[in-house]
Image (cartoon, rainbow, N blue to C red; front, side, top):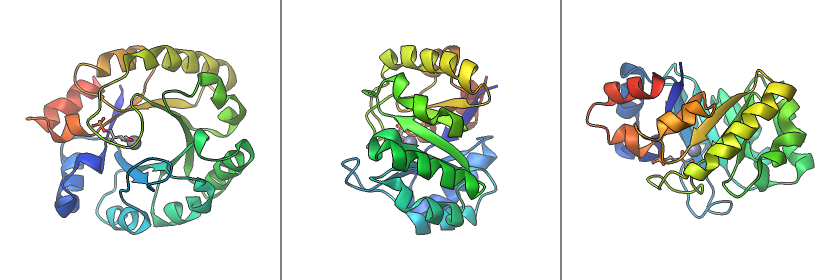
Length: 216
Ligand code: DX5
Ligand code: ZN
């Protein structure tokens, strides 16, 4: 069964507690938190104090997606704030610093993940696989919710699953961007085990039914 991680980027920020509690009530698996710094991506969202506040109102795993420059500077703060899964982008720093960030995440008892932007090839993940619990394949350009799903990322997803089966079979795949009740099917067929959905989840007329479609 696939997992759904609703992205709070599309939540009502004036009613975050209500919307987070609603994710659990609807059977959602994880809460996806998009952190943007206005530098790595052309948008600014939320940071460490908000993750801490979310931690106090949900028992669901917090899946924190760092879209920030040189994330190693902040991994410890996000883990202390309550992240259960912490994702860094391979494009956001040198390979050496990305390796160090992943090691630090794991040493602090958190699950570690890397993310690949649409233009980044699957092979870019190779140096990091041994330190990853998850790989996040972006199916839109990071920065904004509500963009169109890039179906041409499915080859990369399938390719990564094959690589992982050889090098790190326990590592899971997550997709993020443009996932809805239609596009979820091809993601799951190609190996995605966790599906992030922002606008489609929060815009669904029946969120519980939407969760079940993604999970089925
Ligand atoms: C985009 C974010 C996504 C975003 C997805 O940079 O990483 O998590 O919230 O939003 P939708 O599901 O609307 O594409
Ligand atoms: Zn995200």
